[in-house]
Image (spheres, helix red, strand yellow):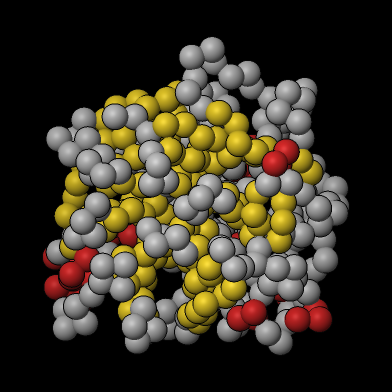
Length: 396
């Protein structure tokens, strides 16, 4: 889901880089944003809004003008949770429960959503820059917080994985990550929970690696940190809806391991660097085996095949791998036979970002319009549709 080092220059310096905690920060318009999400009516005439194709199966669940949204998770019973990282906005509710008419409620409470000077001594009790929200098959909601506001450096003691119960709103478990697992330049990106083996698997896209956590012992390991499968392809220019992703210095975007998904039987972990066109997988048993050296582990990595550049991944019960294709404003899937199929192409999918699949057969997905932000447009934000959560039935 999304990626690190978005804002290499020309944007506010956040807590980790300056030691200060900001109450507001620069928006893509260059103005100072209040800390309140702005919901809009589904039929409002927003600059850059694209019209739904007549045959699109995508339904709008919620939409916001700001702050920027990247992730979604849907718990059993239909509770929808959204993730608003502290990039160049400073959201009131970095993690929120989404209600009717695009309303937001802080999750699990307002205290966890607060990050300022008054709470800087408690980095494990607050969302600093949460990047991923994920609902496991038992109905628990997990939040991965790389704790790197402004996508700069991690706040010391801040990177963490948090397990919550959406029925009670209680925090059940907080797993901190040491600097050996989440270095200062790291950016923990996305997470999948393996209930069968009691493990968590994560991508780390700041430097490029996988992180695995034993949920019994709470011990974590940083893996494949020097393997090419977790690294961006140097010199590759990725495009979003035809727009070349070049930074303010004209250099191609370089984003490491990002998308992640578990096979239906938990036997394989699939992943891909965002700057790249290759899907990889590795046996989860190998990731759980501490006896394997880095070289031996690297030998276990399999090249699955070529794919369009993708941000989010997910897998259905038939082991089709779903891809969010920001290059094509589309949702794709790769069949076990290797065929790439278009699930839906819709211009409203401005940088489709993250999936959430539900047990009742629905697919949810967000759009984050990352390519419209100033860092990829010579410092000037571009008109864009709202940030949206979409829903559709999983295709058969």
